[in-house]
Image (tube, rainbow, N blue to C red; front, side, top):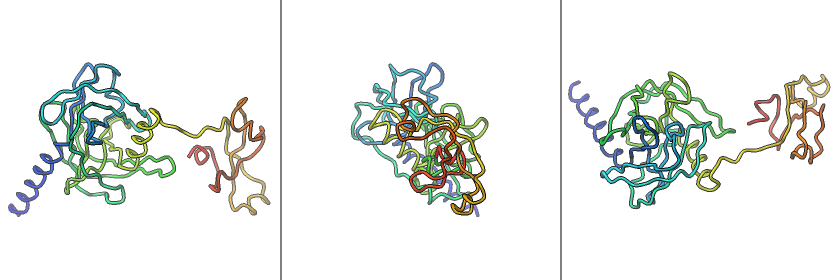
Length: 261
């Protein structure tokens, strides 16, 4: 048993050391620095939105000890993701694990660099919250999120990054923004500087369909239009108050949540 534990312990230490080459320190707030993950070798860093309190004079501490200036590219409060660009090159990019490869019960290391060296804490993956339509993939863990760990990686035993840790998405709960969400958000921020979301310009509420319509459509409810904004895409497309939306682009619409998705 002692040999097994020593092997596992050594493997985790090696994982922390290896992944530490892809972790940076982020100084973008008055109090304790936070952590960031190297996204690309040419200086793109991903971190938590809530730790970037100032958009100028951002300082990034690289794994080798060098400090470089960073510029905020964009942020997405809904996933607690921010993207920073530096003029550094030749950085080490970590391997990312797909969401489908992560299971409840898997061991995970949460890593951070709020100081000069990498810090670690161990836990297990407890649960998931996935919404493919909204590109939101979160993993819940029981790791202790020490101060400054937000923006750092959650790493599996093979050294792949499961996601980016955040202590701000749900009070008292440690969540990690998983790979699909990060890719979607980072790509959008790098391309547009913001997250582009669909906009119709309607207010809706759930409404039960008449029996004949429900039987014909195979659904019991839809989204009743209660308001239409002037000059909105909805008005230009011919939607009126009192219309009931039952599908959008071949996706069934039964309530406000499904329409938003």
